[in-house]
Length: 197
Image (cartoon, rainbow, N blue to C red):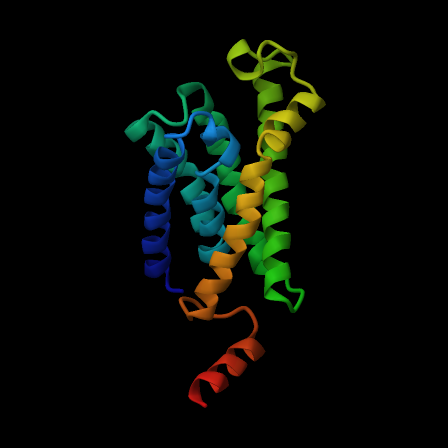
């Protein structure tokens, strides 16, 4: 894609990162479980590359907080760092992972970016709170490996399932309709041949 097209797509995904949480937060507690803001940022990295993924991750939580109050103020900084890592790593992985199977490429990129974002967010929380997190985040429990697993993985299982089901499918669908160049030329040639027949 051209940079102009990437800018337009990124702007649309930033808008989606504001609208999706509004829809999901209509269900009590759904935001922290289903992680709707993560979806547009990961898509930005996978579709538009690491630069636009990083920018989308930086802007999305700040703009969402300014317009809707979500995420809450004490989470804006942490989520900005976490989402920026998602967009950055998803873009880098998407560029360099080549297994000859587009779906496997996407899943590897998605898994690595999700892990990277959660690890960085855990490190940031550790540095900010030096092992003792405030009650509004963990109920006053000291920050530990088990708390990190609970916060970023166990609670988010439904959201992770949605991400695995939807994000890769959306990227592959966009490739299929030639929204941007397909990952593997042989697949593009085969589809072009099927369309012309």
